[in-house]
Image (cartoon, rainbow, N blue to C red):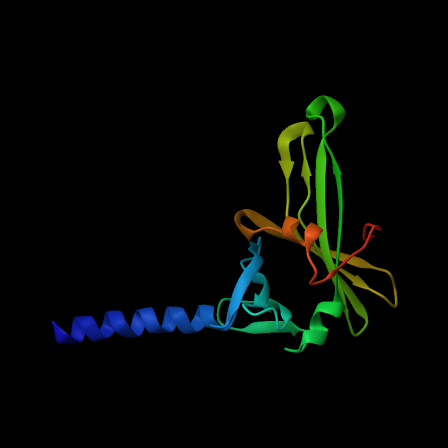
Length: 165
């Protein structure tokens, strides 16, 4: 019985450690999802608004962590959106994007909704700034947590009126 409890403790601890590398104890998730290939995307912020950070990778390894953990990190992200109401007959849409540039690549996290066809999608577009070649990493919408909409009225990151390419 004791061995069984020990095994359960180890299993739970390893799951927590695996998750902890994407969300630290002092952080909260703003937006997250899994890609169609099973990788994890998180956009987190410090609970006291000290920094914002993007993480991407497998369940066991963060492959990319963008921005330092300083107040300056908020200036490295941009939010843009477009909203048109009126239902499907007016082609209602709500487009939301958070973008940042890291070395020679621009990353655009996207979360649009189109009333026509009730189309929802999420993902990341990675644009090579030297060649302008984009690569799209599609997300699994059923794993979506959080929202980008809260950036519309925030004092954390800048709101850009120009939608990303």
